[in-house]
Amino acid sequence: MSIFKEHSIPYALLLLLLDSACVMLAIFLATVLVHSPAVGMTLEAHFLQHLLYAAIFIVAWFCVGVSIHLFRSGRKDDLFFQLTSVGKATLISVAFCAMGTLYLNPAQAEAQVLTYFGVLTLAFVAGYRAFLCLSVWGVRQWGLNFKYVIVVGANERSYRLIASLLRHARFGYHIIGIIEDDASRLSYLREYEHRLVHLGGFRDLERVLAEHVVDEVHICLPVRSCYELIQSMAHFCVGLGVSVRLVADLFPLRLATSRVCHIEDIPMLSLSTAPESGFQLAVKRLVDVIVSFVLLVLLSPLFLLLAIAIKLDSPGPALFSQERVGLNQRRFRMIKFRSMVANAEALRKDLEDLNEADGPVFKIKNDPRVTRLGRILRKSSLDELPQLVNVLRGEMSLVGPRPLPPSEIELYSWDQRRRLSVKPGMTGLWQVSGRSDLPFQEWVDLDLTYIDNWSILQDFMILMKTFRAVFQARGAA
Image 1 (cartoon, helix red, strand yellow):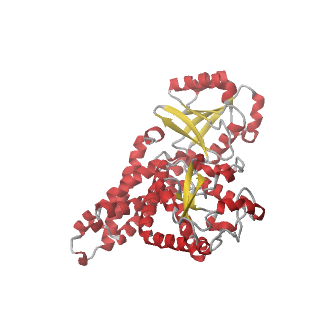
Image 2 (image 1 turned 30 degrees about the horizontal axis):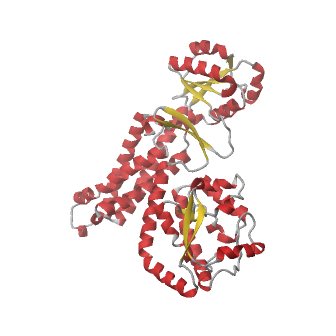
Image 3 (image 1 turned 180 degrees about the horizontal axis):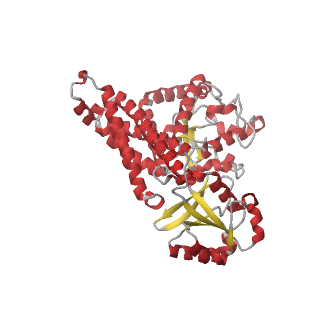
């Protein structure tokens, strides 16, 4: 588990213990606020009955916290990260708590207690985490709890690093000086020359470590041209017990985020623009399965009525399936209720000149191939409902970029193909921002914005906006 690779275990256990104390206090106070003689049991019995809430919440909290780095050392975190992470973890954990309690013991599920519990837990954990964060920062502002650092190399990398360390005193780093062979390269750091000391060249590292208290050596040299030098420095520092930090912008890509992951004991630098939070993606998939299954069961009578109506309206099958392109160019058959005449694909060639959409898509506002009932199905988005089967099978998600046919994907630019880095969805950000009325490049940009800022909360907001857009029949075609 990543907590053993990326977290200080004693610090993580301390935070988990304090978080658990806040959870227990929250469930106790929630029980007190709701308890009344009408419950038919003592306050103690009522509290013990709700311990299941706390148990499920703490397990979910730990899993979510590890996934979003809520238990790592806060030296490089800011208060905004702490509070947003606590809010996100609380929301997901409360959801798991509710589902777990309903599944394990429905009789003990009390919505009012759960509501108070979630609000109080958020307030307590956010409060103490903020206090802890501000207290540590205050200690560092007084000159305590510092790590003494040497920076190796004078270049753009070291300039950005030094600017960040000096700008944020809360990180608790004190820069002893710079090691650089070429004194002329110190011009990169001219802005901070009054705060930095040139300690010597690369061969002086041994002397510098012997003469100064050094906790970390931050190496900012280019790996390709200085590989042997970096290896020698790292080997020497590690032998002395001094931590080495290597600036990892080996491939400064405009969009990709980087992180270090491990396969067993093999460290790997991951560069990705797609969401990689394993736990949140698992939650997304769980929600997809539950919601699609429940809706398929509840809507099955409507499906039957619509199938009969489609067959009566025009000859042909009730369902229409077409090959679409999904996650990382996986092909699948997307299912919809048929809203066009049965030979619509054969007629498309005769209508190419009437295409009103820009970019590599085909769309006609008053498409003559659409049947009478089909216009109603499209306006109400009822034709999309069979895609719940695709969601249940894992080919699609409830929220994501719309899947397109291979013929249209082939015309995409390489930047636009980044839409394929996540599962396609039944609805997405561009649908709730104008749906089919938006120009091609604008809805592609919205899809890429969705990918770059993806979260469970964002998916929930898009689903809520989708219901409103469907009821208003806005922009459907």
